[in-house]
Length: 156
Image (cartoon, rainbow, N blue to C red; front, side):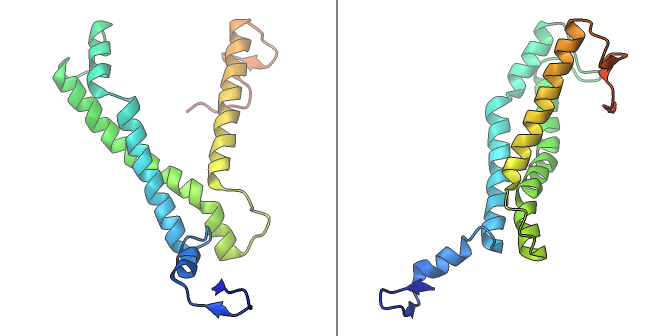
């Protein structure tokens, strides 16, 4: 409720809107998830151009088995991108919204971090691990590396 200077609560439309866009409300989390899905598709469309990818594959002598080079390869890449972007976008939205949902439903006060920060921390940690591994392999250091992979990492 919107509070007026004399302490009374007023029914103000902006007060109701403020409640809807509270980070712990359902409306906020649904809109946040939809925005994440939209921008995942937008980023994929801006960064990955299937025609350029198909042309680069053709230039360097590569091919997709069973697919003709050129326009057919670009169509195939576009189809694959469309299929893998939706599950990835939904996964990102779930990871970003999960802490708020856990705080709201379980009342866990120690989870005062957002899902976006979890994604950033995990991304930086994986990138750092990959860089350390590449430096160790480049220098042929065998202390932490066993058969080309850091010990403890699983093969996918």
